[in-house]
Amino acid sequence: MTRIETKTTLEKFRRFLISNSCASFIPKEYMEDPTIFPERDPSEGAIYVEAVSKVPVDQIRNVRFVKVADVLGVLYSSKSGNTNLKWRQTKGNVGKLTGYASPNSIVNLLQTGILTPSQIKQMLSTLRSYQQGSEREEA
Image: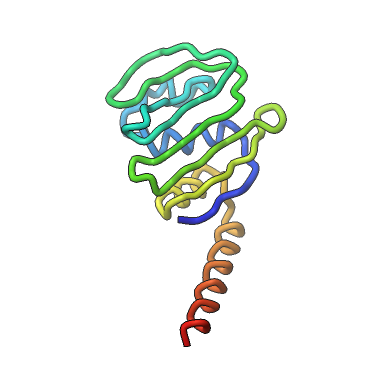
């Protein structure tokens, strides 16, 4: 797991949630509506949207779709528990994303534009430095 700490828009994080939870079955109109978010119970890997207004729209498989307004925060945990991310509003629709992400989630963070290739390179460089330091300690 890799530590994540970056700023991103709510829409980019919404697209990440969709790609990690329901991309294969989300209705097109929900995908295109930036006010509709997936939610999921903790037993399935939690997705929870904290908003001033939240109205249930539909339930498909293990995902509830909710229409939201004025989102304050979003919590995401993968089914495996290897990804735990929290988005918190900082100004308007921009917020700070923090937590830990699995390799698969990092790919989705990159594909949705939350992480940039240069951020990935920096993470890999940091990981290599850490591993080399550990190898020197073992020698």
